[in-house]
Structure formats: structure tokens, C-alpha cells
Length: 631
Ligand SMILES: Cc1ncc(C[n+]2csc(CCOP(=O)(O)OP(=O)(O)O)c2C)c(N)n1
Ligand SMILES: *[C@@H]1O[C@H](CO)[C@@H](O)[C@H](O)[C@H]1NC(C)=O
Image (cartoon, rainbow, N blue to C red; front, top):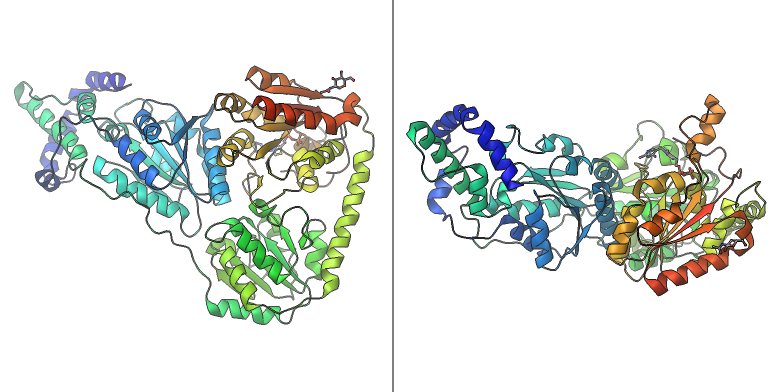
């Protein structure tokens, strides 16, 4: 790697950047390129074999980072080697996009920052979709990317592209490190920003010359101790100064501890205004969104607050499972009707985007209390379709806890909760009836999902990756506890399955992690079964195999009259899993009466052998999902 860069540089080099060298030598005197004052004060230890990767590892270790996800590359090897040395588990995936999804899952499950390191150029561009997904899901991720040496940027170095421009629109903070002494302060700032206010991804570009040791960088850049002729002397002087500046003060003692994270808090006035409105309500309703699961409020504390409030809730995104699977306060079905009947609505982190029909499903005349850390999300479409009575830009969990204390003693119409419960029961009975219907050729997907619901243990974590089958799963499967459901979020990205499951199993090794996959979606990341095998992470997967991209097919056929590009085959995904060292099961119609037993057998084998399992269920059509959105 280094050799290639150095050779490339030498070939095209000397004469090509002669111009800039001379200009640089003159202007450089003006302290722009190398900080001569700094150089004069700080030592350059030219014999040290240490490298910047060690500082990266030190900072991450001090921030309690347990895993780093990656796919290798020479640009980032020093980070991986140093991370391994300080005891961070370095997990190498089969695609960079899965590395980011895994870090995202760790961030969501643990309330810390997920960390990814990928190589320059294609390594980084492969992360773009997952980083955008994390931005939309407000998940804090630190993306470390390799890069060409700063001095070789734009000179034809291997994998050298303008990476900063790619990530600026996707990340809360982007920085490129230009000297070893800057590594710790930049990383601390990046980690702080990732978690502050509205959490999200941050990007730190680490050019190869801040990651390798002094002697290697000097060689790579092509700086010699002396040269023949005036021009060569100037070039060498320039290059030596460039390298010295990178390493000046590199190994001085430096602070690596976390900086304080900023979390926006509600004011007393906002809380008492909300209590005042609540005191007039008989049928209040909470729509909970993912933000409610963020630190600092712990899940148990939030659950206590909701139970104290006694207000029925619909749980969305990461808040699914918050109230367990049996709470009488949780409503699941007929949200539209409930919104029409409620006389006060609390948007606890849920957003008036497409998921709430841009706010059009909210009634006009009842007070709406909106809480969100993010100002844009808080007010989304409030100029068009709805209006908040109180808008609180603050942490959702903290607001609900304070509200539950201030609203103590308030009571609601007892028939309200009963009504929502009764309707849920009715809908569930109707679905169960659909599940018992025979499909023409293959298994009834609803019946497969009902069987899964019956065998899921209390420690199950569900990863949702697909279209129709997963949409049905979201109705039928009940997450057992807080933070036990992972879906892509508002970006709706297919392909999260392998990466999410990887992160979830590492963050919660004692849980039984289940990927619920569409057959189309499975194809994106089934290769991560290899990663599960190598890292001895036994994951479970259920593929609803209908030989199509059905969610799209359904409406494309109706509206446009063709199934073009929407058909797949009944492929042997269970055999693919076996090829990657897992166990595979094929479920067909003849197994219909036996599904629960087979699922349990698969679970037992998973526990017994420590191998991941893929259950390939050949499913047929039902009318259950007709009319649901399919974009
Ligand atoms: C990366 C990405 N590509 C395409 C889509 C569009 N899309 C949404 S649902 C869907 C079909 C999913 O098919 P499958 O995983 O087989 O599940 P099924 O609907 O058949 O149950 C597609 C292609 C998307 N959301 N994300
Ligand atoms: C499904 O049924 C067939 C036919 O009875 C049987 O041979 C097969 O073993 C069953 N599959 C599983 C996974 O048990």
C-alpha cells in the first residue's frame, strides 16, 4: 500500500509538484502549510515507532467503545491494529454498508456511539446509504475513513476522491485530520456532537500520513534528507517540513476523556402548560417515537412514568416493545380512529412526516403537545396540516418523566382505554382467522408469523428487513421488552438485516436475535452469515420467501399492469446459509401443521451448536396487505 502510493508519487511526482513546491516554500513561510511557530516549540520525535492509530484507539477506549466494525484496507490498518490492542472487538463484515448498520444497531441498543472504520474511496462510498439511514434514524455513529496523504490529494493517489463533499450533507460534523496532535481533540469533539442535541452520524477523515509512524510517512511522501541541486533542496525542505508538522507534538500527553454531551431539556413552564391542558382532557393519547428511547432516561424509568400517567400509547420505531407485550396501555391497531376520538394528543418524538400523513391524520380542534429534540422535526408541516398547542424542543423521555410527576392525580375516562383494548382484540381475532385460511400452493405467511410469535422467548430481539412479509410481522409479532425491535426507520432502506443482527447480537449476547426477512431483502446481506460464523454469534433468521419483491409487485401490477422487475425465484436461501457455516431449514406447505415444532427445533439447534440458523419459508399470497403503501 505505502509502496504503491510512494511509487505513484515518485513517478508523476517531483516535476509535477515542483510549481506548488516552490510556491509552497515561499508562502509556506507564511505558516499556512506548516505551522512553523508550533514546529519551533514542539519536538518532533523522529525515532518513535508509534502511530496515530494508537491515539484513535486510546480515545475510543476512554469513551467506553466496545466494538469497531470494519472492512479492511491499508489506509486504516493502524486503527484496526491499535483497537485490537486496547481490547476493542474489531468485527470485519462482508460489506461496508453492513458495518455501518451494525454500528447503528449498537448505538440504538446501548445508548452510546457506534463506531465504524473503513478504507478510503470505495470503502467510504459503500457506507453512504447506511450513513444516510442513520441520519434519518437519528442514530449516533462515528465513521472513521481512510484517505490519501493530504499532500498527495488531487495528485492521482490511490482511492483519492473528495470524501468531505460526500459526507457533509449526511453528517452533523465532518473533519479531516491534518496532524497527529489533532487526532484526540477532533475525535472527542466528533463523539460529543454525535450524541448531543439530535443524535446522528459524524465523519472523521484520517489521511494515511497521520496514521503511520514517522519513518514510514517520510518514506511515503518521498522526503529525503538531502538532494542534489537547488530545486531538489527546496522540494526536500518543503516535504520535510510537511512531515515534521504532522508529527510535531504528536506524543505530548493529551486529554482523551469524553466531553459533556448536550441534551436539550424542557422548561417548567412547558411542563405546567401541558398539565393544564391535560387537566381538561378525558381521552388523551400518546404517539411515541424513537427519540423516547434515547439516554439519559432509562427505559424502566420511562415505563414507570407512562404507567403513572395512565395514558394509552401507540409505539413506533425504536419505542416498540417499550411497554412489553402485555401492557393494557399499549394500543396497536386502528390508530386513525383513535386519533379522531382523542381529545388531547402528545407527539412524544413522533413526527408529522409520511408516517402520520404529514399531520393530516391529526384532528384540528384538539390540543396537541409536540415534543422533539429537533426543531425541524418538531414543527414539520405545522404550517400546513396541524398546529401544536405546546411545542417543546427537548428530550422526550425527560419531558414525559417530568410530566408524569406534575400531572400526578389526574384521571381519564376509564372507558377510553377499554375501547382501544376492545378494538385491538377484535382486529387480532380477525387476523388470526386470516392466518388459518389455506393458501393455494404455499404456506400462509400469517400463520408462519403467528407460529413465530408463539415461540419467541422473552429475550428476543427482532430485526425487520423487508416489505410485505415484514409489514405483516410488524402487526403480528409483539416485541417483548424495551429496545427489542430494530427497523431501518424513516429512510426505509432494504438490506439492514445482516448488519443490524450483527450489532444487536454483539450488544446483547444473551438475547435471541431474529431477523425477519423478505426473500428480496435477504439477498442484500445474507453474506453476513459468514461474519456470524467467524465471530461465533448465533443469530436466527426467518425468510418469508414468496419469490418476488411483493410489496412493489402488488401495486405495480394493479396500476401499471406488469410485473416487470418484481419477480424472483424460490431460491434455496437455507443452503446459502449452510455454505456460510450456518444451519438451514426449508419450510413448505406440507409442514403447515408442524411449524411451531420446527421453529422450536431450530432454536434448540441454534443454542446447542452455536451456529446461526436460516429458516426458508415458502409462502403464498393473502389479502392482508392489500391497500397498504408500497413506495
Ligand atoms: C435499498 C432499497 N431498494 C429498493 C426499495 C424499494 N422496495 C421497498 S419494499 C420492496 C420489496 C421488498 O421485497 P422483499 O424483501 O422480498 O419482501 P416482500 O415485499 O416480498 O415481503 C422494495 C424493492 C427500498 N425500500 N430500499
Ligand atoms: C417438512 O415435511 C416433510 C414431509 O413430511 C419432511 O420430510 C420434512 O422433514 C419437513 N421439514 C422439516 C424442516 O421438518
